[in-house]
Image (cartoon, rainbow, N blue to C red; front, top):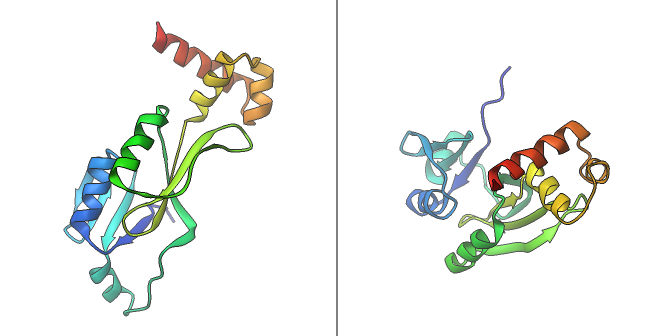
Length: 159
């Protein structure tokens, strides 16, 4: 068996597509009309069509037991864009116990979305704040080799 992708149900396909493509900058991979798959392999499906596929069983939103997770290292401009769009936040920017900065909010259909900085960027950010490689490995639960590679990646980007 092979896992393909998560699929979320949306009430208004044009509104959902606008949100994912224009606000979250996702790139469409396949367009099947009532079902759209994006690069990164998640899909949105028109509720009226999907409902028929599951024998009209009820769909309940919001659900805080499932989320789509994205990464973006430059979170502050994105959060400003989300606020301008009027999203409903689950919570604004905060640090997880492992120090990763994340924001959670609902899409227009009340599907929960999380956007966090990459673990690579977390290591680089904390390194710039003075943490040692060994401390970063402990904080992030990543191996020292990962931490060193992450720091090198971002230092090279700054050059």
